[in-house]
Image 1 (cartoon, one colour):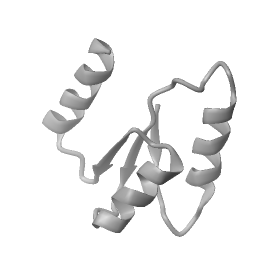
Image 2 (cartoon, rainbow, N blue to C red):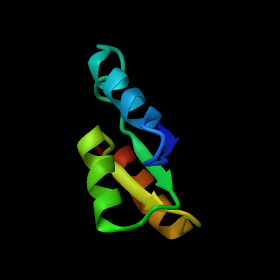
Image 3 (cartoon, rainbow, N blue to C red):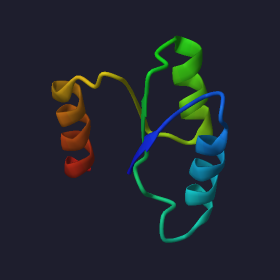
Length: 73
C-alpha cells in the first residue's frame, strides 16, 4: 500500500501503526513515497512501520523493483 509520507504531519505514523495493529492488514506491505530523502527521514519511515521508502520524483525502475520484491514474497 503506497502512502504519501510527510514527517511534519505524523498522520503517516498513526496510519502505519493502525494498519500494523489490524489482523487483516498487519502483513500489508507499506511503501512511503515522499519528498524527504535524508537518512533521518528514511529511518523515521521505517521506525513508523513502513517497509520501503521512495523519494519523489519516484524512479520507476526502483518502484518496479520494490513491487517485484513484494510480488515475489
